[in-house]
Image 1 (cartoon, helix red, strand yellow):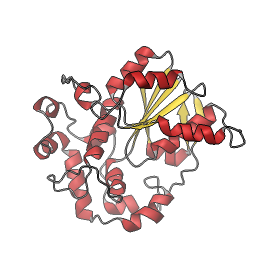
Image 2 (cartoon, helix red, strand yellow):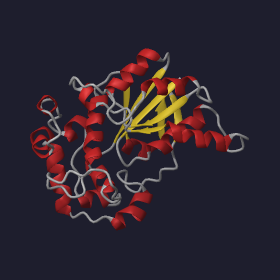
Image 3 (cartoon, helix red, strand yellow):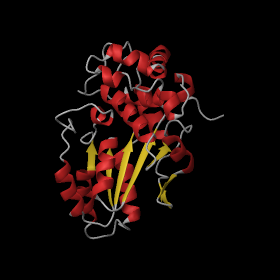
Image 4 (cartoon, one colour):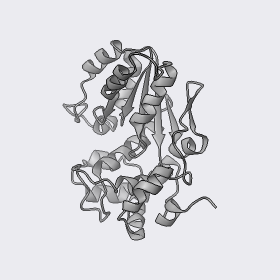
Length: 265
């Protein structure tokens, strides 16, 4: 069986995937090959290799997976998996989900979403070499964050993909996989928006102002109208299909900086 775990930036997808892998395959720390399995699991963190937004939107391209995914090699990886249930994590396209559903007998796909305001806030704290959107007047907004949010919207529209809110995981400490409850209680909620770790260890390093987050919220809430004017790499045929509002499509409301950091009263 293959479990495809696609998710928003900031939620620690690889950690969730390894936890699901352990519990569904009954892997225990005491197993003699535990470290080998743990090391092998890093090969299952596929990140953005199988994202294909252009193909998902019906735009012809010579390269289905422009970020390096080798589908034939992945099928070989699946068929040579070291345990019955393989869990892969990353940001996966509709195209990839349809391909594995065609080629693998048992596939279970999950799309974990998170409030875009919280994602932007947390994702801005760790700066890296990833391309940033420098024209949208939104500080520290990574292009991969925008792409990941688009991918979440696309997957949410697929009837064969289970969409789960990260906030519900924080509240319950579990996720349901094929009618089986997986314990994710290692996430300690601060306010059902942030984890305790994020609040205590990341937010003190946050350099965003309330205005920065308001500007991001305006972009996300008017996504189809604003983004194409600030991303020269988006062709017209994709621009016309972008979601009007990320908040509406993902079933969230914009959050201010105060709301993101406010403790539960």
